[in-house]
Length: 194
Image (tube, rainbow, N blue to C red):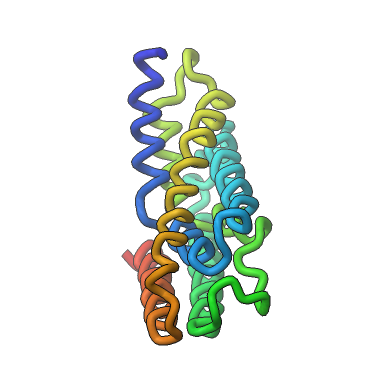
């Protein structure tokens, strides 16, 4: 392993496993729907985040920095999208686990969330600024990020599955979903308003 790749892997691990909107939603999805149903949203979200890293490295990051209004519009779109997802989580707060009445977080929603998530863009700009070199071209950085993000996000789904045994009662499930919805709102709006 290249010495320049190890710091990038550590950065990618810290960025992809830290709490954030997508990881919180995957946690809730894992608790409600299980691992098998969580795999498609996990893969979609991780591929979208890796694509953002690649796009930033190919010049989109510099373009966004040059046009702050576009960056602000993306931030607002992300906060509104996350607020809608938090609202959905609140509305399904006490529905039984593994209920068939909702489809949960689908792959398209998971990918879209990453595209409008300010944390993903800030992380991508930092990654490219710190680690993109001729020795580590953008395609490799995006691929390595994807390979690190997949098990990181899967760990969040597994934590959700592990928490499901404590969520058998309606009251416990309602409190869990309300807490996650609140964290999702705080995460979305603090990124925008701070």
